Image (tube, rainbow, N blue to C red; front, side, top):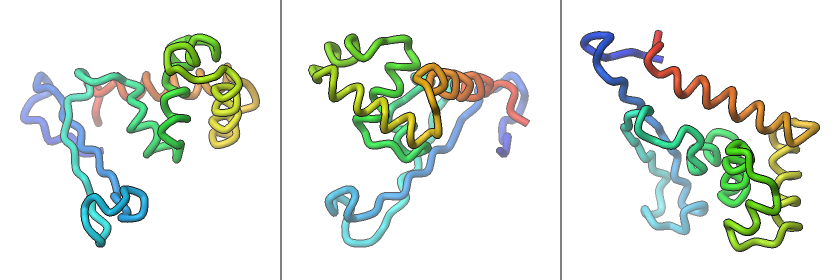
Length: 127
């Protein structure tokens, strides 16, 4: 990580790069792969943003939403109710998240995601 702040007191700005493959984005940005660059202040975004989780962890958008809500402490029933999805579907998505993260239990997924949150929230300690 590169710290380009003038002083330690300046707020950090992070750069997130996303590869936009034409087939994955239904050709919305043309026929050539593109890179989407986003600058943001990590102290003013949700630490477990589903879009970022999807990109970083190779989760589907639905799996990323479920993973973020798991880390918030919601149960499969609560996630299903909040998303208008059957609990069985949410449980299937939880199993997929667990498989992709190499987790044996839901608690392991929550721990992995919360540890990531701790790293993202530590933006003030950029080296």
